[in-house]
Image (cartoon, rainbow, N blue to C red; front, side):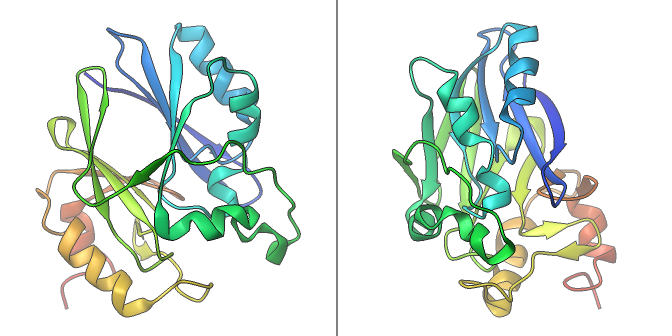
Length: 212
């Protein structure tokens, strides 16, 4: 069983997800966007132990709360990010372009690769490499729970922007069609911004990549 607590945090209303196996109390934070104290408090209230920080990509609004979370934990959490986004991470997630100077927190120690399996108690997260929004963007798919954490690849009725450094429209579209639209229709898509949606809905109605 997987429990998911969602937060909308930071200056651009980014979705962060605190996920845990309620049996083992093991927890991870997917995209610790901002206000790490709020995420920490939610974990502490439930008796969950945060051992991992998993980044779908390294933009500043997805890592802005990492330092605050890590500073409160002993031992430090394991940090996972695709190697193609390490340069972006070292640059503070590109925050300077928008007037933000953030502490990116502890250095990533796990390089996401396509097909990698991340374990959280009894829950298995499959890493799928989905570049297009950034060079190193990945999604995390939990097949048993029919949930995919999609970062900024695809949103309800929209898709991630491709006009920032490392973005590419053709690559983004390919990632969506090959890595999202091949999932079962009922899979819930929990994205980096906005409301959750499903594979079925986006295949049918998404104005950018849906059926034409």
